[in-house]
Image 1 (tube, rainbow, N blue to C red):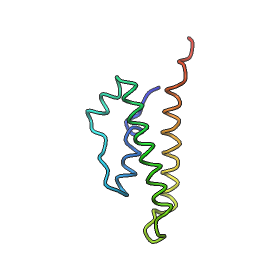
Image 2: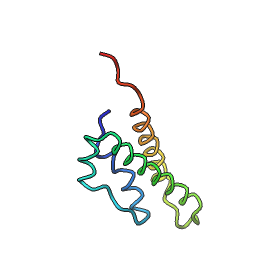
Image 3: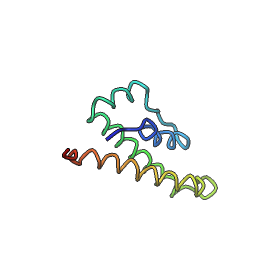
Length: 95
């Protein structure tokens, strides 16, 4: 599975736009390319952060909630992150 840098940090960008959140560093992105366990950790942290933010937004007063388009984008991002994590569990295809 090839990890797109956008996928690795997109969740943190969404969350950081709504809360105080430390973005993924360039060093972490480089490390994730060669370390599958670390890549999984970054993806899982991003997924957790997106889900936590969605839950917080759901409970927020309507005047403070993100708009429907932002919420749809966040849900799509959560699904994409989950797919990336799941694909890491699949055995590589036989040539």
